[in-house]
Length: 193
Image 1: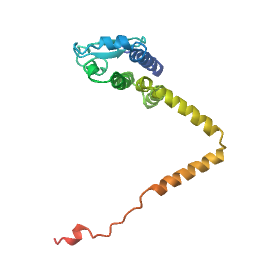
Image 2: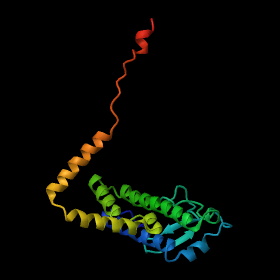
Image 3: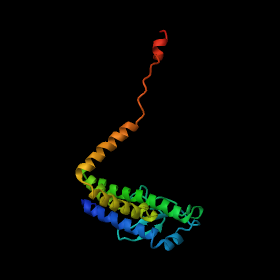
Image 4: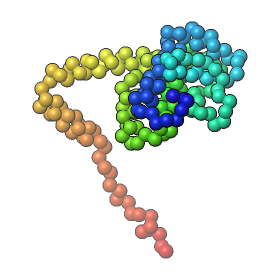
């Protein structure tokens, strides 16, 4: 993908996104011991790269300025020993998520995606849990909650669901504080010109 600039499809960019994402998830989960070892705080500013081949690497940032692609967070190794392991991994995961989005939308801009193509790419990406959700375990919790909500709502009849929605919006409106009218005269009226 980083080679030629011939027009690419949304599916090509999404495939690149998924490959990089898979590599990053491996680094932060199943291959975390190796990742931890490569992030020595005694080394220079290091970055975690997800590769389209579903691999990952810890390396120095690109030397060219500006770089061909957006760069991941710089200096991930420096915070390693100053934080709890799970907090450090969560921080790297959040930065990895933002980097993945930057790379995907860089390709979208570079390949001239229109509004419909960008929206399609966004929707495809949004169907996947974020790296942070996978690393922190919230992706599993959300999947369980979603399935229990789906099972619970499928047992209700549609008219009841509509009535519930109406009563919820009525309840929300009744929780709003009453609008207070200001009876004090304006400062302009009190001042003489």
